[in-house]
Image 1 (cartoon, rainbow, N blue to C red):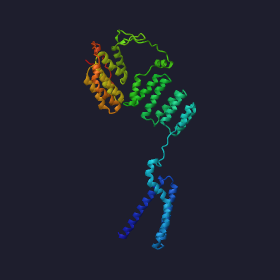
Image 2: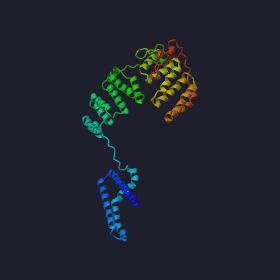
Image 3: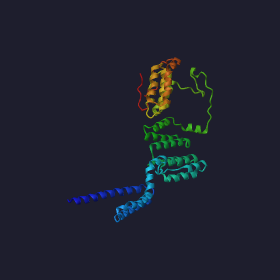
Length: 410
């Protein structure tokens, strides 16, 4: 091919590439511009000025070109200088005022909240619904609407329906589900005195969000759900006849409580705790009581430590509770085992597991005073375990927190 032909092809290709780049930049600038019409006018004006300048320069001597460039420069300065200056200084100004990024659209419920506070729940509901039409599935708006229905309008079915619709929508998140189901359980207990409906709501959390803090909290509530009688008594405010307790209650044989009912024997109490744990393995309060009962009444520190270790290893438990149980384990080792190394080891586990000063500093202080605690402790009389008491609470196989059953200790 003729070299001139190659040169022509190369020039055309270069010109096409430059034109494509210019068009792409122009299109990108138009899309990003807050005033596309003004920018388009500037581009057209610049093309006309440059094209006219080229035509004029072809008919005048080169010595005149600098003179012609002066008005062109003035036109370009007026047209592009403000935009270029803004572009160059924008990184600094954006850091101060946030730039020209548009604010994310969000719902506003201040009007609805004001109307609710002023005693106009119907108007507040209308204001909330107006926002929810613009932002369907908004979590705060949904809970606000349901709260007004249940608490201000005494319309529990309407509030529950609002929640049910949210739970069935595509916007439902696990955290939102847990919050709403918990609120539904609270309202079933508070407004309808319906523990069964509350139980169903809490069970949904456990089933739909296993191995989460929300499921753990729901399981704790399920273990201590009040009965209908408890709710009625709390609502009516029935008085409870309280009598002074006996000063030496711990030294009396066959002691009966203030109401005249005998206090459960440790064996019966342990059996009651085990039955509760068979129904609700995650009931941490009952398992803690069982651990203390093993150590205090039967001097079975091994069984007590086993229960506390299950609590400590339970997933999704809060650090505050874990530290509480490690301190309790140290208490039992000092009080009933007189075992200073074991108590020291329990407290040092806190230092290994956590670094938060609020959790660690009390353990460090207590480590320094463990020996004094041991010296202050009194000797606990050892109770001989009978054949039945030997495996107290374990004869049926006490479930641990994972649902497994513990083998009886020989």
